[in-house]
Amino acid sequence: MKSWSQCNIPWINTAEAMIPREIRVKRRTLAVLLPTTLIAMSWLLAATPEQRNVVLPVVIVTTIVLWFWITLWNRDRAMPLFDVGVIYALAVLAYTNIPLLNYISGGFRFTEVSDARLYFYQPTPSELGFFHWRHVIYIFSFVAMYATTRGKHPAKQNQAKIPRRSMFLALVLLFFLFTGYLIFLNFLTSSYLVGRSYKEMYAIYATGEQIQLPLLIRQISHYFAGMWFIFKLALMMFVIQHCHRKKWRIILYLWLAAEVAFCIHRLGSRTEVVMLLMAAGLLYHRLVKPLTLRFVLIAGLLLLTGFFAYGIARGNSMRTANLQDIYPDTSVQSHTNEFQALLGTSYDLYQRKQKGSLQVPWQLYVSDFLMLVPQQICPVEKIDPSQWYLGLLGQQNTGVGFMFGVISQAIAGLDWLELALRGAILGFILAQIHRWYLRNSSSFFVVLFYVWLCIRIYYTFRASTFYLMTFMVYEIVPAFLLIKTLPGLLRFLRPSRSTAGVHI
Image (tube, rainbow, N blue to C red; front, side, top):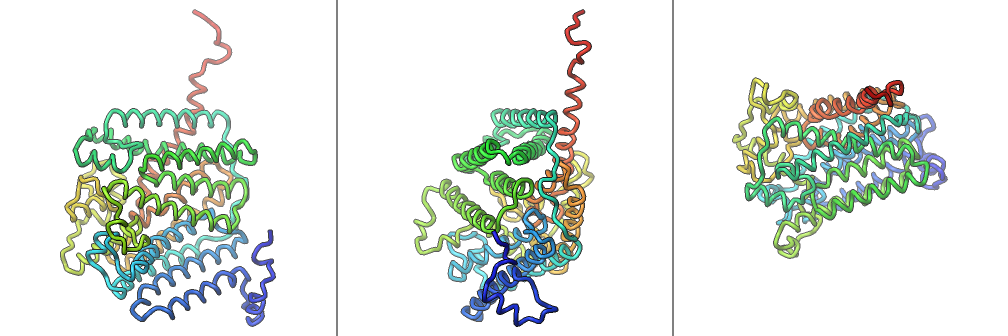
């Protein structure tokens, strides 16, 4: 299959011929940016002056992310899919554009099926568009820093070492041990709602049937759940490393199908399944065979569509009637979703700050670092931003939850300046992590950590900039230590051949 740079496309050849030879860009760049520019200009011209306030941030953020993607592609001479910076830029693109597209599809307003806070405020196109320039500042500072400091050259294909048999057995043992612990905890108490649907979870919260475990047990169990997911991810990586053979591919497909079927059956949290599907695609691209652009686009569209459809179905299962039946004139595209809810939090905080009613405790500014200190020994009161926000709404301990987000964090602080600094700092940190990964791309644990970071990096936008530090310290480090030390411990405990069979 020919690459875009080898294709003979007449209109691209004509466009290239008009550009001086010394500044001629690659055909791939023209093939993406030229049609995107034409579509964007047509959309802006068709919109009214008021509507352009909303359309313009969509166009600018999309253009920045496309330029970023094409620049890295041209630099590496390979599609930058297994790249934490690209994945984060795509996540910011989704969190920026999807709520605006919901707003546009609702007739440039939020409808009765949209987020309740946004429906209450009903921002005008100019108000919402001005608010979203924060997203433009943030993604621009991130992309500029990451592209400048990242370097080039992708990791070599199929380079990660396959774990020894003893390590694989240790992985299997750890996975089943932690699975057993979480299942036991689920049967023992309703505090850990493993495998429950959202409807069951809200019913338990509403009736107060959950049993409160001791704080230490809750802390340990929370991080055990994260380590359990890491063990599952490591096992999946081991399976994918053998996917050159048909039987291993069948095992992978059956595994992913079972995960999706179980998730649909219980209508619970979809996060883990989405992350596993993403990890499977990234690891297959990195360890087995590069995925084509066509496959990535189709798979991404299907995943996003399924994500929204699942959310709507889950929400309807918790109600006595379908919202679309109650409000038949509203567009299904304007239905509330995770992306819209995150905007609802930041816009609500912005309105409160404008009215002068926002009182922010100082712990909120250092909450990411306070999370590293166990509550039992923390010298000051720890404040979780999302719980603090629920306190503002008067909805603590009700089963309702809203993520805080980096935009909200900046609004509570220095706003525009803080967003530019946060974007640049994160871009520099992720660029250095990518360079470190390239230097150690043959290590099983480095690749495992990198793919874990890729599928969870969106939390730095959905929660806060340094939110993942706690999970690295309390999940990644102990999980890797267990995987590395358990084989040696098992060998130590196993009787040696010289003493086997000796009876005293």
